[in-house]
Length: 337
Image 1: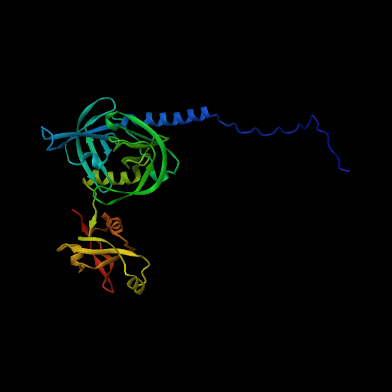
Image 2: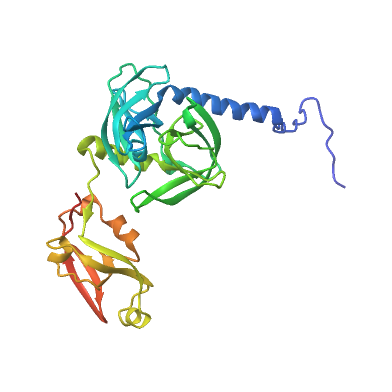
Protein backbone atom coordinates (compact mmCIF):
# COMPACT_ATOMS: atom_id res chain seq x y z
CA UNK A 1 0.00 0.00 0.00
CA UNK A 2 1.23 3.45 -0.81
CA UNK A 3 1.41 5.78 2.18
CA UNK A 4 -0.19 9.17 1.73
CA UNK A 5 1.30 11.86 3.93
CA UNK A 6 -1.12 14.44 5.31
CA UNK A 7 -0.36 18.08 4.58
CA UNK A 8 0.89 19.52 7.84
CA UNK A 9 0.82 23.13 8.83
CA UNK A 10 4.55 22.75 9.49
CA UNK A 11 5.12 22.13 5.75
CA UNK A 12 2.72 24.34 3.83
CA UNK A 13 1.93 23.39 0.27
CA UNK A 14 3.78 25.50 -2.31
CA UNK A 15 1.66 28.14 -3.99
CA UNK A 16 1.24 27.94 -7.75
CA UNK A 17 3.48 30.40 -9.62
CA UNK A 18 1.59 33.50 -10.69
CA UNK A 19 0.54 33.63 -14.35
CA UNK A 20 2.03 36.52 -16.33
CA UNK A 21 -0.45 39.31 -16.70
CA UNK A 22 -1.60 40.00 -20.22
CA UNK A 23 -1.65 43.64 -21.17
CA UNK A 24 -4.94 44.98 -22.41
CA UNK A 25 -5.22 46.49 -25.87
CA UNK A 26 -5.39 49.93 -24.28
CA UNK A 27 -2.17 49.33 -22.32
CA UNK A 28 -0.43 48.10 -25.47
CA UNK A 29 -1.51 51.20 -27.37
CA UNK A 30 -0.33 53.39 -24.51
CA UNK A 31 3.08 51.67 -24.55
CA UNK A 32 3.32 52.17 -28.32
CA UNK A 33 2.37 55.83 -27.95
CA UNK A 34 4.95 56.38 -25.21
CA UNK A 35 7.67 54.87 -27.42
CA UNK A 36 6.79 57.13 -30.36
CA UNK A 37 6.44 60.23 -28.16
CA UNK A 38 9.74 59.58 -26.36
CA UNK A 39 11.68 59.02 -29.58
CA UNK A 40 10.12 62.10 -31.19
CA UNK A 41 10.91 64.34 -28.23
CA UNK A 42 14.52 63.17 -28.23
CA UNK A 43 15.12 63.95 -31.90
CA UNK A 44 12.62 66.53 -33.17
CA UNK A 45 14.51 69.55 -31.80
CA UNK A 46 17.47 68.57 -34.01
CA UNK A 47 15.37 68.34 -37.20
CA UNK A 48 15.67 71.30 -39.56
CA UNK A 49 14.14 72.53 -42.77
CA UNK A 50 16.69 72.91 -45.57
CA UNK A 51 15.60 75.66 -47.96
CA UNK A 52 17.31 76.48 -51.24
CA UNK A 53 16.99 78.51 -54.43
CA UNK A 54 17.77 77.15 -57.88
CA UNK A 55 18.08 78.76 -61.27
CA UNK A 56 14.88 78.57 -63.32
CA UNK A 57 14.09 79.90 -66.79
CA UNK A 58 10.37 79.75 -66.10
CA UNK A 59 10.46 82.09 -63.11
CA UNK A 60 10.31 85.89 -63.67
CA UNK A 61 13.31 86.46 -61.39
CA UNK A 62 15.21 83.47 -62.77
CA UNK A 63 14.99 81.51 -59.53
CA UNK A 64 12.73 78.95 -57.92
CA UNK A 65 12.57 77.85 -54.30
CA UNK A 66 12.60 74.35 -52.88
CA UNK A 67 12.88 72.69 -49.51
CA UNK A 68 13.62 69.43 -47.80
CA UNK A 69 14.53 68.15 -44.37
CA UNK A 70 17.73 67.50 -42.46
CA UNK A 71 19.03 67.04 -38.94
CA UNK A 72 21.92 68.32 -36.85
CA UNK A 73 24.40 65.56 -36.00
CA UNK A 74 27.31 67.50 -34.48
CA UNK A 75 27.27 70.31 -31.87
CA UNK A 76 29.17 72.65 -34.21
CA UNK A 77 26.41 72.81 -36.78
CA UNK A 78 26.95 70.02 -39.29
CA UNK A 79 23.67 68.86 -40.80
CA UNK A 80 22.85 65.69 -42.75
CA UNK A 81 20.40 65.75 -45.64
CA UNK A 82 19.97 64.24 -49.12
CA UNK A 83 22.17 65.10 -52.07
CA UNK A 84 19.10 65.60 -54.27
CA UNK A 85 17.75 68.17 -51.79
CA UNK A 86 20.73 70.51 -52.32
CA UNK A 87 21.56 69.61 -55.92
CA UNK A 88 21.98 72.71 -58.05
CA UNK A 89 21.29 75.09 -55.17
CA UNK A 90 22.40 78.71 -55.66
CA UNK A 91 21.70 79.57 -52.04
CA UNK A 92 21.02 77.56 -48.89
CA UNK A 93 19.49 78.36 -45.54
CA UNK A 94 18.20 76.27 -42.65
CA UNK A 95 15.24 76.82 -40.39
CA UNK A 96 15.61 75.33 -36.91
CA UNK A 97 12.79 73.82 -34.89
CA UNK A 98 12.83 76.88 -32.60
CA UNK A 99 12.18 79.21 -35.56
CA UNK A 100 15.69 80.56 -36.08
CA UNK A 101 16.65 80.88 -39.74
CA UNK A 102 20.09 81.48 -41.18
CA UNK A 103 22.38 80.82 -44.13
CA UNK A 104 24.10 77.49 -44.62
CA UNK A 105 27.03 76.32 -46.72
CA UNK A 106 27.37 73.06 -48.61
CA UNK A 107 30.22 70.98 -47.18
CA UNK A 108 29.90 68.21 -49.75
CA UNK A 109 27.44 65.96 -51.55
CA UNK A 110 27.60 62.39 -52.80
CA UNK A 111 24.95 61.62 -55.45
CA UNK A 112 26.03 57.96 -55.46
CA UNK A 113 24.51 57.50 -51.99
CA UNK A 114 22.19 60.54 -51.99
CA UNK A 115 23.94 61.96 -48.90
CA UNK A 116 24.95 65.59 -48.34
CA UNK A 117 26.40 67.58 -45.45
CA UNK A 118 25.66 71.28 -44.93
CA UNK A 119 26.73 73.56 -42.10
CA UNK A 120 25.31 76.59 -40.33
CA UNK A 121 26.77 78.97 -37.78
CA UNK A 122 24.20 78.64 -34.97
CA UNK A 123 25.24 77.71 -31.44
CA UNK A 124 23.40 75.82 -28.70
CA UNK A 125 22.13 73.27 -31.19
CA UNK A 126 20.26 70.12 -30.29
CA UNK A 127 21.98 67.06 -31.75
CA UNK A 128 20.29 63.89 -32.97
CA UNK A 129 22.05 60.76 -31.62
CA UNK A 130 23.09 58.23 -34.27
CA UNK A 131 22.22 54.55 -33.90
CA UNK A 132 23.29 51.42 -35.79
CA UNK A 133 21.27 50.47 -38.86
CA UNK A 134 22.98 47.07 -38.92
CA UNK A 135 21.12 46.16 -35.71
CA UNK A 136 17.67 46.71 -37.24
CA UNK A 137 15.24 43.82 -37.73
CA UNK A 138 12.18 43.54 -40.01
CA UNK A 139 9.06 44.45 -38.05
CA UNK A 140 10.90 46.87 -35.77
CA UNK A 141 9.18 50.17 -34.93
CA UNK A 142 10.60 53.22 -36.72
CA UNK A 143 9.55 56.89 -36.77
CA UNK A 144 10.07 59.39 -39.61
CA UNK A 145 10.38 63.08 -38.78
CA UNK A 146 10.53 65.84 -41.36
CA UNK A 147 8.84 68.72 -43.10
CA UNK A 148 6.61 67.25 -45.82
CA UNK A 149 5.02 69.86 -48.09
CA UNK A 150 6.23 72.55 -45.68
CA UNK A 151 4.46 71.18 -42.59
CA UNK A 152 7.13 71.59 -39.92
CA UNK A 153 8.19 68.65 -37.71
CA UNK A 154 5.64 66.14 -38.97
CA UNK A 155 5.85 62.67 -37.41
CA UNK A 156 4.83 59.36 -38.97
CA UNK A 157 5.42 55.88 -37.59
CA UNK A 158 5.62 52.40 -39.05
CA UNK A 159 7.84 49.37 -39.14
CA UNK A 160 10.95 48.21 -40.95
CA UNK A 161 9.45 46.37 -43.93
CA UNK A 162 12.74 44.92 -45.22
CA UNK A 163 16.50 45.35 -44.99
CA UNK A 164 19.33 45.11 -47.48
CA UNK A 165 17.41 46.66 -50.36
CA UNK A 166 19.23 48.39 -53.23
CA UNK A 167 17.98 51.63 -54.73
CA UNK A 168 19.07 53.27 -57.97
CA UNK A 169 20.50 56.75 -57.40
CA UNK A 170 19.92 59.66 -59.77
CA UNK A 171 23.23 59.00 -61.55
CA UNK A 172 22.50 55.29 -62.09
CA UNK A 173 24.55 53.73 -59.32
CA UNK A 174 23.03 51.37 -56.79
CA UNK A 175 22.74 52.55 -53.19
CA UNK A 176 23.43 49.50 -51.03
CA UNK A 177 21.80 48.38 -47.75
CA UNK A 178 18.74 50.60 -48.03
CA UNK A 179 15.99 50.32 -45.38
CA UNK A 180 12.44 49.78 -46.61
CA UNK A 181 9.72 51.11 -44.29
CA UNK A 182 6.00 51.79 -44.34
CA UNK A 183 6.37 54.98 -42.25
CA UNK A 184 4.63 57.46 -44.56
CA UNK A 185 6.91 59.86 -46.47
CA UNK A 186 5.92 62.75 -48.73
CA UNK A 187 7.79 65.40 -50.74
CA UNK A 188 9.75 67.44 -48.22
CA UNK A 189 10.55 64.45 -45.98
CA UNK A 190 13.72 63.86 -47.98
CA UNK A 191 16.80 64.22 -45.79
CA UNK A 192 14.93 63.83 -42.51
CA UNK A 193 15.80 61.19 -39.92
CA UNK A 194 14.35 57.70 -39.58
CA UNK A 195 14.47 56.94 -35.85
CA UNK A 196 14.18 53.80 -33.72
CA UNK A 197 12.13 53.53 -30.52
CA UNK A 198 15.15 54.69 -28.44
CA UNK A 199 15.33 57.96 -30.32
CA UNK A 200 18.45 57.03 -32.32
CA UNK A 201 18.73 57.90 -36.00
CA UNK A 202 19.00 54.69 -38.03
CA UNK A 203 18.50 56.12 -41.52
CA UNK A 204 18.09 59.19 -43.72
CA UNK A 205 14.76 59.23 -45.56
CA UNK A 206 15.36 59.45 -49.27
CA UNK A 207 12.62 58.13 -51.56
CA UNK A 208 9.09 56.90 -52.05
CA UNK A 209 7.71 54.72 -54.83
CA UNK A 210 4.72 56.41 -56.46
CA UNK A 211 1.84 55.72 -56.89
CA UNK A 212 2.38 52.78 -54.50
CA UNK A 213 1.60 53.32 -50.83
CA UNK A 214 3.78 52.21 -47.93
CA UNK A 215 6.91 51.74 -50.07
CA UNK A 216 9.37 54.20 -48.57
CA UNK A 217 13.14 54.02 -48.32
CA UNK A 218 15.95 55.38 -46.16
CA UNK A 219 19.72 55.11 -46.52
CA UNK A 220 21.10 53.23 -43.49
CA UNK A 221 22.94 55.42 -41.01
CA UNK A 222 25.97 53.10 -41.12
CA UNK A 223 26.42 54.02 -44.79
CA UNK A 224 25.56 57.67 -44.15
CA UNK A 225 28.09 58.06 -41.32
CA UNK A 226 30.94 56.70 -43.45
CA UNK A 227 30.00 58.96 -46.37
CA UNK A 228 29.59 62.01 -44.10
CA UNK A 229 33.08 61.48 -42.68
CA UNK A 230 34.53 61.54 -46.21
CA UNK A 231 32.53 64.64 -47.13
CA UNK A 232 33.68 66.50 -44.01
CA UNK A 233 37.29 65.47 -44.64
CA UNK A 234 37.56 65.89 -48.42
CA UNK A 235 34.35 67.58 -49.56
CA UNK A 236 33.64 64.52 -51.69
CA UNK A 237 33.79 60.73 -51.59
CA UNK A 238 36.85 59.38 -53.36
CA UNK A 239 36.17 56.51 -55.77
CA UNK A 240 38.27 54.76 -58.38
CA UNK A 241 37.67 54.31 -62.09
CA UNK A 242 38.83 52.17 -65.03
CA UNK A 243 38.10 54.64 -67.83
CA UNK A 244 35.67 52.50 -69.81
CA UNK A 245 32.06 52.58 -70.94
CA UNK A 246 30.36 49.22 -70.75
CA UNK A 247 27.10 47.38 -70.55
CA UNK A 248 25.84 44.06 -69.26
CA UNK A 249 26.00 41.16 -71.67
CA UNK A 250 25.20 37.42 -71.46
CA UNK A 251 28.19 35.10 -71.76
CA UNK A 252 28.27 32.54 -74.54
CA UNK A 253 27.69 29.17 -72.90
CA UNK A 254 30.43 27.40 -74.83
CA UNK A 255 33.02 30.02 -73.85
CA UNK A 256 31.88 30.03 -70.21
CA UNK A 257 32.16 26.22 -70.03
CA UNK A 258 35.55 26.31 -71.76
CA UNK A 259 36.98 28.54 -69.02
CA UNK A 260 35.04 27.09 -66.07
CA UNK A 261 32.94 30.20 -65.44
CA UNK A 262 29.80 29.67 -63.36
CA UNK A 263 28.36 33.16 -63.99
CA UNK A 264 26.02 33.82 -66.89
CA UNK A 265 26.77 37.49 -67.53
CA UNK A 266 29.66 39.95 -67.66
CA UNK A 267 30.45 43.51 -68.79
CA UNK A 268 31.29 44.16 -72.43
CA UNK A 269 33.62 47.11 -73.00
CA UNK A 270 31.95 49.53 -75.41
CA UNK A 271 34.69 52.18 -75.43
CA UNK A 272 38.03 52.88 -73.75
CA UNK A 273 39.18 56.32 -72.64
CA UNK A 274 42.50 57.33 -74.21
CA UNK A 275 45.26 57.21 -71.63
CA UNK A 276 42.94 55.87 -68.92
CA UNK A 277 43.67 52.90 -66.62
CA UNK A 278 42.01 50.38 -68.96
CA UNK A 279 43.80 51.81 -72.00
CA UNK A 280 47.17 51.51 -70.23
CA UNK A 281 46.31 47.88 -69.44
CA UNK A 282 45.57 47.19 -73.15
CA UNK A 283 41.84 46.59 -72.65
CA UNK A 284 40.06 46.79 -76.01
CA UNK A 285 36.47 47.53 -77.06
CA UNK A 286 34.62 44.22 -77.33
CA UNK A 287 36.45 42.63 -74.38
CA UNK A 288 34.14 41.13 -71.77
CA UNK A 289 35.15 41.70 -68.13
CA UNK A 290 34.32 38.69 -65.92
CA UNK A 291 36.47 39.27 -62.82
CA UNK A 292 38.18 42.11 -60.93
CA UNK A 293 40.53 41.54 -58.00
CA UNK A 294 39.37 37.93 -57.74
CA UNK A 295 35.66 38.85 -57.54
CA UNK A 296 33.18 37.83 -60.27
CA UNK A 297 31.85 40.71 -62.35
CA UNK A 298 28.33 39.94 -63.56
CA UNK A 299 27.31 43.50 -64.43
CA UNK A 300 28.01 47.21 -64.19
CA UNK A 301 26.75 47.30 -60.60
CA UNK A 302 29.47 44.84 -59.56
CA UNK A 303 32.13 47.08 -61.10
CA UNK A 304 30.77 50.11 -59.23
CA UNK A 305 30.70 48.13 -55.98
CA UNK A 306 34.37 47.13 -56.24
CA UNK A 307 35.73 50.43 -57.55
CA UNK A 308 36.08 52.16 -54.19
CA UNK A 309 38.62 54.56 -52.72
CA UNK A 310 40.80 51.78 -51.31
CA UNK A 311 41.56 50.52 -54.83
CA UNK A 312 42.95 53.84 -56.13
CA UNK A 313 46.48 53.31 -57.43
CA UNK A 314 46.58 49.58 -56.64
CA UNK A 315 47.57 46.93 -59.16
CA UNK A 316 44.46 44.74 -59.45
CA UNK A 317 44.07 41.50 -61.43
CA UNK A 318 41.48 41.83 -64.20
CA UNK A 319 40.13 38.82 -66.10
CA UNK A 320 38.42 39.31 -69.45
CA UNK A 321 37.29 37.34 -72.47
CA UNK A 322 38.52 38.35 -75.92
CA UNK A 323 36.67 36.20 -78.40
CA UNK A 324 37.15 32.65 -77.09
CA UNK A 325 40.39 33.53 -75.32
CA UNK A 326 40.65 34.18 -71.56
CA UNK A 327 43.11 36.93 -70.61
CA UNK A 328 44.42 37.75 -67.15
CA UNK A 329 45.94 41.23 -66.97
CA UNK A 330 46.68 43.88 -64.36
CA UNK A 331 44.94 47.24 -64.16
CA UNK A 332 45.65 50.24 -61.92
CA UNK A 333 42.44 52.21 -61.20
CA UNK A 334 42.79 55.98 -60.87
CA UNK A 335 40.74 58.39 -58.80
CA UNK A 336 37.45 59.44 -60.36
CA UNK A 337 37.23 63.18 -60.86
